[in-house]
Image (cartoon, rainbow, N blue to C red; front, top):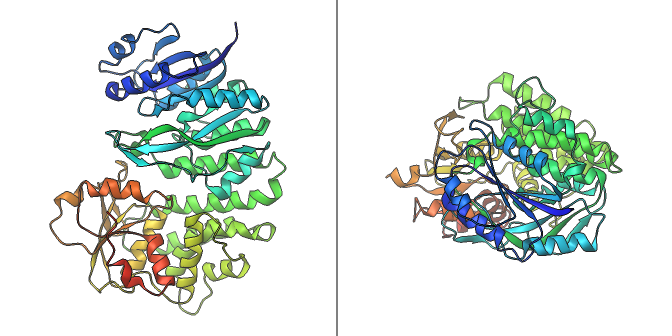
Length: 482
């Protein structure tokens, strides 16, 4: 008998969330699926929680402890019996009709290889943070190769818990490598946890069309125990873009989008290099490396000048350190790039405006009093730009806040990286907390910060850019965003 769908629920030591997630799956309006609960060696009462559910569709698979999350997911692919597969997670909750609506779309469009959905977000207690992770809009069907190409400019980020795909289209040899603990394409383990968010839809799109349902059919939970807070996210994103570049050369979009991926790869290589710098100034050796990365990423801009948008953060950083009287990489970029239309992704449009401000000799922090104390949320490339920009305006960056335990405690660009909970312990007044995220999820970040600091002004770099352009930066300092 053919099983239309396998739902694989990955879990590890989160029985309080697992019970909610498992109940939501069992109570789906679509019922024709097998249910695998993939336990990655939990050491708590997870087995009792799972075995407390009585459902003939349920199989409980308990792996030995010590494996990465990718092993648990790969195990699900190798043992699933369904024609299609959904790998979901114990901290997310499906809306009751999620599977029904996805499987109905497969019925209407049998050529599709994968379908994922929009999502709402919630905090660790289930409180709603965002109604839509992606902006509301129409459903989308991507032709073969189109998702791979558009992921570059649109910066798709869809957590994989709603992705139903066709496992038979995955390369079996690669799956067995991951299952045996071997890295893909290198001689040592690569930091790839999290890069499947890009890679699996792209692997499907190499073979067939894929689709996105814009209804928020999954509640995605943001909390401190997430894998993303314990992983090298820069490494994962870089691995994802390297993989997507390898895929796009096999599509009809090769000529237009290889330059975009080259630019993104250069940008994230630069980000990885910058995060390694402890001192308050960039050493000459690091600057030379960053300049070389810029050249590598901009080699083929003539084929697609829009690829320059992806290099803007790196070009801004080099411009901040450029010697007087020399043409900076930013000026080279602005000479060949088209103007940024407002329809572009918000962060790219704001970066383009920031580039114009820097090119004219401006500074986002010009209306902050010299000696003002600020903290910056984040410790990656955009954060580095803000640290440098603030210092050039005489503003004191007290520290950088970061939820990733892999970054906390590091000394970075002459500042200490601390957890957001530092705000509750700080007793010195701050002028502002500045958000460095490129994603448009400021409400989530403010919600998280307000648990530790109820009063300090919170402002995003995008708001600073817009207020500068409008000529009223001082108005930002009077805003309250909570």
